[in-house]
Image 1: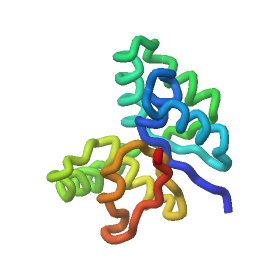
Image 2: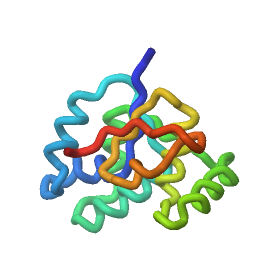
Image 3: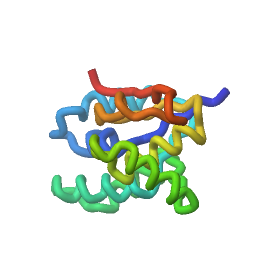
Length: 137
């Protein structure tokens, strides 16, 4: 079975930003990744925003997506499910990008979410199942 890694905003930004506290972890982790890399449009948008705040061109995220062959899966048909997830985790609060990744983890149940976001320890896929994560130490 091919390993599937779902990419969150934090690791993309850390990889592209040498001054980020998780840059080394992200670089080492990306070097070790095998299998399919999947993300969503919301993550790409967030990452573009954050790298621009750090002084990079917004398009550097798209260059990384292309170079690494990251599949960007659209979730427009999942809006009802995404809204339900965001409502369920309103106290966290859950971002739209996080909801998309939780939904992708349901669509790809053997996947692992690469993230810097500790909220993924709280989120559950399919209501009760822990989401497998790859996080900085």
